[in-house]
Amino acid sequence: MIHTKSEEIYQEALKHIVGGVNSPSRSYKAVGGGAPVVMAKGKGPYFWDVDGNRYIDYLAGYGPIITGFGHPHIAEAIKLAADTGVLFGTPTEHEVKFAKMLKDAIPSLDKVRFTNSGTEAVMTTVRVARAYTGRTKIIKFEGCYHGHFDQVLVAAGSGPATLGSPDSAGVPQTVATEVITVPYNDTEHLQLAMDKWGEEVAAILVEPIVGNFGMVMPKPGFLEYIHKVAKEYGALVIYDEVITGFRFHYGGAQNMLGFTPDLTAMGKIIGGGLPIGAYGGRKEIMDTVAPLGPAYQAGTMAGNPASMLAGIACLEVLQTPGVYEEMDRLGAMLEKGILDAAEKHGITITVNRIKGALTVYFTDQKVENYKQAEQSDGEMFGRFFKLMLSRGINLAPSKFEAWFLTTEHKEQDILETIDAVDYAFSQLK
Ligand code: PMP
Image (tube, rainbow, N blue to C red):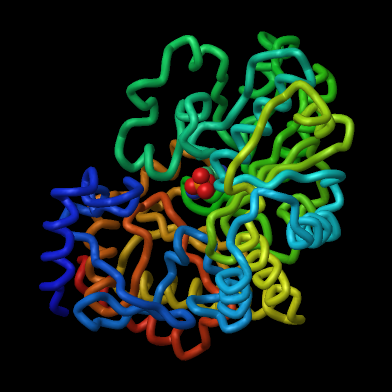
């Protein structure tokens, strides 16, 4: 596969954009370096790079692209916004319609607010929890990534984990002291932390299903425990559903698993590929937000018609009967193909799959927390990533990320992917 034009554009990018990329995870630093492939266009589950190579994509823009690229229903919605005004700085009907759609899908949301990114959404839930409880400390879980604001760049997963800088430079120590990090799926540590600081804890912030050190399910009893101990100490529970919202079924992981958090942050999928975030929760907590209450949050672009219309259109596609079942079916087929190929070639892997999302860890251990995910062989993953790319399969360039299916992947794409996995594993030995 020739990547001459990608190389040229990346060399030019390095002169003008820091690191040549607009988000660190997009560089190939975690997979042994090299010029990232520069994409030109996409359609359905495929995209093409500037050299004309075609890839079956499992990155899905790091999660949002659940209906594939250029979905006609979403394209139509974006065109409508382009033709009728992308921003007014006033209320619109679209944002009301979309807020109602989210509430109908996720009953814990009495009221919502739209933001421009997942980071902003989570950041505001933390502020609102502090405003509502009058406390300052936050408990989060090791390896869970919640965006790039100061307070959650402490033992964060995903990009920061891969890059080996879990505590970003520039985050004051005073901020970090307000954040307590506990291993995921570890009720004992959580209890210890709450026994020590419980009275000062404003909220326990959690990815109800982890997407940021690969896909990891909460162990039976873990989320129950979070809710129980939070209640005991008068702390709120915040679910970060930026990845999980509408990923596994129509609604949040909270509906799938049967929990009711006090506050929820969302992003990614709900924007249909356009920039978005949203947060919401119980009425009395949300009413602390300005202009009703003293907790401030705002945004020039928040609730803009383009993101609202694209988000509505995306959710409409996801209301089609059977779409999640089909992603689950194809996900199972892909998982089986990967495991069979590993066995055939004597490659040791662990696969964590949740419906249409999975992670391949190069380890013989089960993966239930960040430390176990870290054991996945990064050098081996790097070689696997590049072998897959050479066969026209695009994965996220990090051992900590997931493969995401879309509503547009078909059986033939899965078979082609399994063939590529078979080839890659044959070369890895
Ligand atoms: N929360 C989670 C769980 C995420 O995975 C991410 C992004 N990967 C964020 C928050 C931040 O979202 P954004 O990149 O839109 O700011």
